[in-house]
Image (cartoon, rainbow, N blue to C red; front, side, top):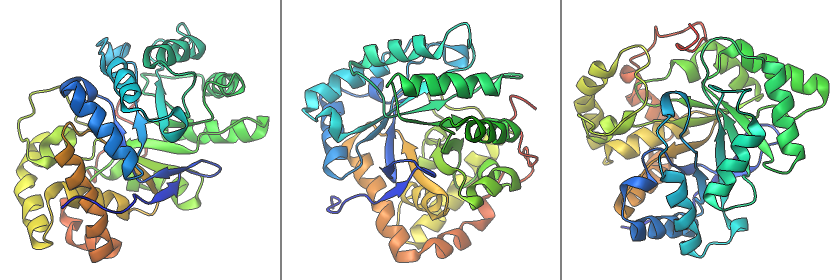
Length: 326
């Protein structure tokens, strides 16, 4: 049965916009489906109130792929007939070649490739080693002043750097990050639920944007993914594969699918503003939308109770550092 309601919205952090709790991510998404299917998927996302698209130019560091996914998205969203004001666009700013490759250069390239004038939000991405947080906040503010986007978040930053970014921005009258995009789901919870990020989420200083909820498809039943998937932080992937039958069992007991269980779990976290997922077929989106009914029926406490034994990374970076900096 197709979803007939409207996806609810939540604030993307203090001062952030109201965003749908579901958002479509771009990595290995738009370039792995037929073009007409991409157009239909965008239209359906808009129809149910989930027209939030996370789209990046993958051309640096571990993502030096020169993928066409952002180009395809731009073509598909224009073909969909949806006006620019009727969807939210979240881009990425990479730190691997920063400041040699400036944020201004990255933004000009990104919006030109998609074929738009600006993004609504950006996520300032992964890094190795130390970074100049004050310079990052200042350069982000310059891009906001230039009208290239309105707000920003961080992606997998060490917690001390996040705190510094918030404090420096507030001291200087600049725009602080309002959300953190973290790997978060049934089996990988430590970064989001550990004491460090957890303190910022509990205080309301940041919202959580969950990504890689299905571990590259493993928790959706694709136990041997053939495509490139996200990093295996803590080396727990074999344990994740072994845990999938338990995920199936719990989902079946709730008259739900494993994907619905995974999304309902993420939305049960009070700090979660939205969750990114990549779908390449309309039926996958419809299935995901069913998570909303599951959460409403079982409740956040009920979802967390039945999935408590699935937390597999309790001891991974419990000090709040990210493995790439550890």
